[in-house]
Length: 428
Image (cartoon, rainbow, N blue to C red):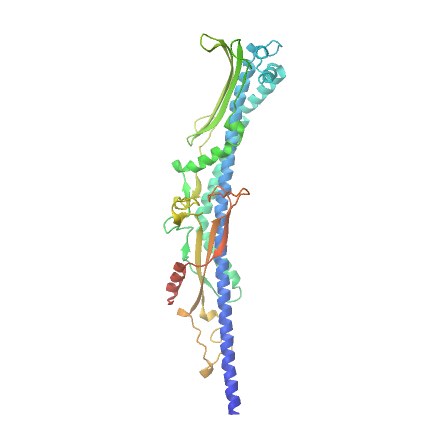
């Protein structure tokens, strides 16, 4: 009986020990998984915020491109209206016209088209619709300006309310993981927060205004110039022989430019020159003006334009990172790391000394699983990175003009772990 009692006592001790160890392991695992969920959710918010800025920046660029197109069309229609009048001295409506006689082959079809009443009427109707009072072009500019203001407001709202919304999200994710299972705490101060303190100083993104809008201006110009009509509207047509006998030269020029940060300027013009051999070289005998047009959109013109919009872009510290950087420590895309600590009081754990009803006493209470300061803690780190590989193998640089920001979990840094230990009063 004595031996049997000792065996039963040993079995009871082992049972309590195994139970408590299993429960503590399960508690710790659940806390770690919850910390991962919280950190990942915060990382998803970071990635979505960066992609949101990229989408809204691109939307503002699209509105700017539409402004460039409207200004270009307005100038071109004014020029076309003048061209209708300018072709008359060339007698284009006859088979003996100057362009035909001088074999300016490329120009002849246009000359004929603008000489006949039907072609002239179409140009006139289009010009009146586009450039008269309350015209289509200025209406489009007004709508584009409203859209840009709304997009900037959305960016500002997101930026100003982001940290509070992130805190609420982390709290919600933690509570959802412990629904009907007690309380869990999320530290109010993250162990690492590159979103607000990138490299320990300023936020990861920065508001760009004034002369800091250069990147937006360059992106706008590049986008608008993808339309060949905006970039350059030029051609020429010339007689196929030297000027030892009279030749004709039809020349058309036109382009649209973004001046400084404040105005779009479009100019179009054309002329026809009759030239012959002079004493040393070809000389111009006659010049026919074939129309001109211009349109400016700025704050002080009928076509109101309030300039390149303010926007959000990566901070200067983040932009210093590049795959081609000469600084080895900044070689690669900038990344946003976020480390957070979750804690759970030992009284919330389902061990024999806490939330379960059966509690060993005396010699059976051999399990001492008290964590430092009576709490369990877990640390997790998420990382947002820029990842977009072209099919040709080229890699884009991280910025807020392309929405290719993604998130994953990474290992905790030594600094984050040390900070968490210090908070708990634990030693390595």
